[in-house]
Length: 215
Image 1 (tube, rainbow, N blue to C red):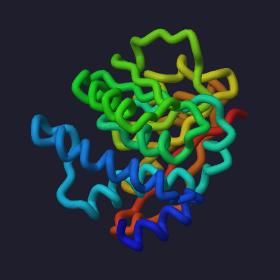
Image 2 (cartoon, rainbow, N blue to C red; image 1 turned 90 degrees about the vertical axis):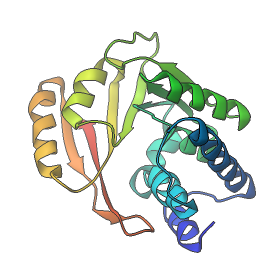
Image 3 (tube, rainbow, N blue to C red; image 1 turned 180 degrees about the vertical axis):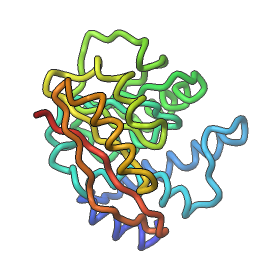
């Protein structure tokens, strides 16, 4: 693992143990193998995997490590190939994560990876978030580069507990507009929205979090 990645993970308050590094490395190999069969997610080279997939997923710890460590249930909407849900399940083994996606080949991979990596704290659901009906609710919903915040809110608010909130991975482009749009439709439900500071991944890419709080 590149030193830049290790330094960044430390900033994210991740205890980078040998077990965590090995599981993240095993996940990389599983992705490489599956990408030979069909395109799960784009990985140009090894650094891109550690930077745009692992470090980006872990970046939630820059601002929300206490939230993640203390939350009971966290849903990853539009989980794709398992980012951030698999990465966070590896890094926070005491928390329960649920990966949700409507594309079967992606959830099939996430299930397979969770079994091979022995992630007992990761549940996988295939279906559209606005259509699925679950008996449990989530303390937090997160999503990484899947849709605009307005669409995420409309499709998932029924999945939150009464005090539940959002932590959304975003890029700075148009973020003020996106924040304003989701504020407009969610304020009547008691949500207020905030932005983290802009930060950089080890490879230099800019990121920001859009997150909610209950009024």
